[in-house]
Length: 120
Image (tube, helix red, strand yellow):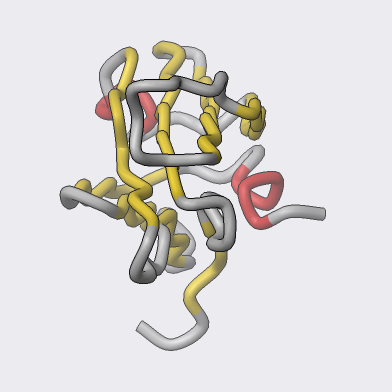
């Protein structure tokens, strides 16, 4: 089971969004972090949030899903590899998709980490 799956049925108390990470705090005190540890020849960032993150606060999550798609080659781009990662969340108040984009020279990871923080 992935960490984002653990959020189904939990109620988010707070969401903090930075430039390259999002932290979810649940009402039962758990903390989950979504981010990418940047390396030299890569760029992974939040491209867009579709929907209102506030729709995820205060109601139990009914859906948590990750979809990963390889990007198309772009002859005008410096990167040799790209990846889109979509995190889809829903409550009875609304639906949110967090869209990440990663690109690299092909030797570095473009994946997004989503994990439970044990000590915070």
